[in-house]
Picture 1: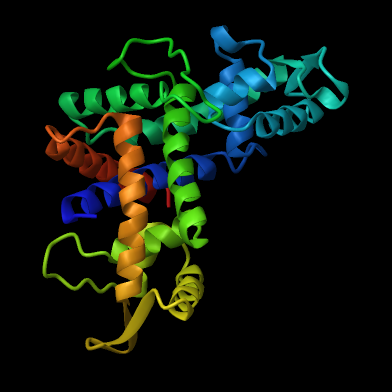
Picture 2 (picture 1 turned 135 degrees about the vertical axis):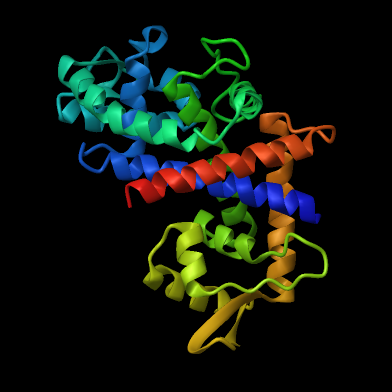
Length: 303
């Protein structure tokens, strides 16, 4: 993975992962998981106001079984009703109840406010590019989310459920790639990715406080993860010359190779899903940088 590609992958992985974290934080008072919230969002749309798990799975970029379990959980709370289908609700036609729509209305306010602030750093050109990329991701052939028919034209602002499907589909690809390649979680891979130098000839070192800010995780998580990655020979801890009790994290040669190998696969997925082409990598990188700045500002505003 070359340095420009590494920078782009880092930016977009960070931005999309943090958007998911921000939304999950704003759903904490609703009792809904992210997937349950997204099911309600989709059932509130006219084109999918009545849908079976198989249909929901395509627009939500999840497996039918995952969509089915979310429907069952929402039905148990009186937020969704089902009719027909097999025993236990699998394959049944689902629709949102009035209680579900009321909960959704309240949940949407903080989520939409967060996303509005997250996107606020993007200019018209970057905003249109982002929407084009998100739209393209919905039409990726293959997998469980074949060619979703988007209700708006390419480049126009995507309705919230479709925007989330695009974001989640990318983070799922990264998470699956990291797990299959090295048994790493998405956050563990991002830990290593942040340590990868984005300029030739530079050795990158970061402190624990840097990692907590970059990954939006606790200090204890950073400590535990660092030990785990060190035991696998992917990370080193060096004394911090500016802090007698501190350490600096860095990649080993094996860690750098692993991050690069996974990054090449992620970059290929990124290009395939979002239409990144050699003629516009700078534009894509600039949009990613501005998006990440906006996401960080939105997270700081409510931390």
